[in-house]
Each structure stands twice: as C-alpha cells, then as structure tokens.
Length: 530
Image (cartoon, rainbow, N blue to C red; front, side):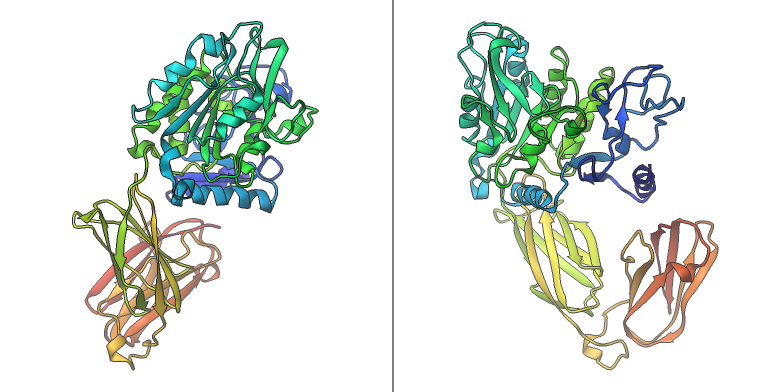
C-alpha cells in the first residue's frame, strides 16, 4: 500500500511512467481474483496484477474479504493513470544485465546492425496453429517487415499425432538468426512452453523450450542462445510463462520463470517480455496480441512499450483475467523501434561557464532542420530541463549550473537514434560582482532541484546588476509561508537551500516561490513530499 500511495502522490506532480524494480521478494505482488467469490482462493488461481500499481483511482478491496479485485464485490478500475512495468530481478547483477540490454536497444540496437529490427518470428502450435492465429497477427505488420510464418509453425497440423516440427532445438536455432518481435502462441508452463506435441498438447511426443533448464537434448533452452546484441521484444499468450512468483507455488527444477530468464540473461535473450502470470486462453488471448502490434505500428503516442501493453488490454475489458494477469516485464517508457532508425546531427557549445543561463542546441537530419526533437540537459542535482526544437531545428533552454563538471545534452526523436553530447562546465566566481565580464546577462529564476523534494531543495537565480531582492514562498491559497531572502544583493549567481524545517509545520503539496528584483518578477512551482 505504501508504494501505491506514493505513486498516487507522485501522479499529482506529473508522474506518467513507473518501473517496479524487483521480483516479489523486492516489490510485493498484489494478487487479484477477476471474478466474484466468497471463498479464499489459492495462489495458483490468483493473478499477479501489476495493474494495481497503475490504477490509482479504483478501490480494489471494497468488501474486506481478502479477495482483491473482484468484478462487482470490489471496484477496481482497469484503466491506468500511469504506465507500469517490472524488472523481476533480485540481484544487482540481474539488474545490470537488463540495463545493459535496454541501453543497447535504445542507443545502438544490434550493435549498429539495424537489420533485425524489421524481422518478426512466430512460434505457434496446437489449436492456435489450426485457427491460423499467427496469420491473423501477422496481417497487422507492415509489408516492409520480414515475417517468418513457417519455420517454427507446428506441422503438418496442430492436431497431428506425429508432428514433424519444431523441436525445442529448432526453436533456438531459428531464434539465433536474430529477431526483433518474437510471438509465442503455445501451451505453456512457468519455466517452459511446448513447441509441438501429439494432438492438442498431449503425448507421447512433446517438445519444450525452457528458460534456464534442459532435460532432453532435443529440447531447447534460452541459455543456449548465441551472445548477440539483437535484443528483442517477446510477446507470449502461453499460460504461466510470466509467473515470476513460481517458486512460491510449484516445485519446479528452477526458481526462474521463462519470462524472467528472457529479460535477465546477460548478453542474450531480450529487453522485454509480455506474458501471462497465470492462464492464457485459446480463443481470446491472440486478440490482445493482435491489438498490441496494431497499436505499436501506429507510432506517436503508442511508441512506448507500456502504452501498447496497457491499451491493448483496455481494448478488451471483458477479458478481465487477461487484463489482470498479462504483465510487462520491461520498461514501460521504452520506445519501440518499428523501422530501422534515422540519424541525428547535433551541434552545441562544447564548453560553458556557470554564469551562462541559456544553452542552445541545433538538430538536423540529412542536412535539414529537425522540428520537435526533444532536448534534455542534465547535470547532477543542478540542471534538469527539457525542450523541443523549433521549425529551424533550434532549442534554447534556461540553465543554472553552479559547479564545474559535465553537462549532458541528450537529443531524442521517434524513429531516430538518440544523440548525447558532453559539455564542459567551467566554474566562475561572480557572486560579489567583482568580475563584470562574467556576470549573468539577464535576470533569471530557475526551477528548484530536486523537485519534488524532501528534506531540501536548491533555488538558483541570476542578477545581472546589484538589485533590491525579495524571494518568498507561497501556498496554493496565496498565503506567504516563508521569506527566503530580502534586501540589496550583488550582481551574480545566487543559490539558496530550502529545507523542510524552514517551512515549519506545513503539509505535503504544491507551493510557489516568487523572485522580485527591481522590475523583474518570476514565479515557479515546487512540490514538497513529507
């Protein structure tokens, strides 16, 4: 409850994305039951519902019977306020493995060979194969994609008693060819899925693809994947493959679910896994999968992984168990490559001074100005600002570095590789006005940092000349809470630290700080978290 309450408070200050950092031993699971019941259900009947952390308005336990998320006994809201994902790690090394893959995917997919980004693979067997669900999904992919709809489809039919393909080994061999989107339409278990079987998911013939365990040589395991930088996105409708709590329920040869292994393996596997924590369904799960890719290829607002996962489920609200139990193991904010990326050219100063209060970036592509590229400037706890380029490709933003060091200028735009520049910051002492050449050029009040804050935050302002100054804090009612600074001050760069103890017994919430200096006046908003 503490985590969800924090997210509610942060949402009021603009939170949009939330990444849960850890498996159930680190970030607790909210187990939910999608129907009404008067009896306690065992864990195997309850869905891992990270949606609980994303929906900040619903009441998931109205009747107080211990069964959360019931259809009518409770009042959950299926529509999220924030987009959610989880990295199911429980060691620093697992976190490092995933972060390395994420950064490679976002900044240099394929290690510079982008060809795999327009390749999609389908693994399909049993009823899903005979209902041509793989073909239904493939139909929403653009024509420029390479789509393999044969190599790993069960043959000659999904119901044949003596199927000929694919073995688990064959799955791994084909996966090693490098694929961006991998689609699983197979019957599954927490740590594996069946690539083919006699009849519909029966014996005696049955082949598996495992996560990190291998029982028979003809089966496959993700640990046998080649070490490459072709990190993909794996969407599965198989039962249980996203059950990262499996060790609490089943006695299995490994404590790791298939989805965990896929995202946490070092130097192989993928960057994200979208899969079921409990049941998937033959006749409905593929509809959500189709909608997922239909949305992804629209780009724009659907360019982020967490958005397409959430909206694809919201499109089918009657499938409440799938809305609850199908989760994203990955970063919800992560942009999705839907074509090979274009290249940005970025020009900016290579060095600045602490007295500089504006920074300009010029962005072009193939020699032409690039509009609406996002520019982010970052320097420790001193600078964090964002802006968009105009029609001429320029973005000018106010900054307030206070120490020597490095300012990072990062430029991103959908469909383009991000570009990052390092800018040297030189410290100039001008607080007493003794160095006229390095005085600020104009009055400026900057955004406090950090924001939201607790226990303290810094407020920086520039005075181009000696001035009569007032810096005051107000609440939402316009009542003055604190006078921070008052009187004649020298020209230069000024920095004040505001601590919670200086504000007294005030509550969490939004406050305003106003600087008045001669004829200049500016107000900015900040948020206090108690």
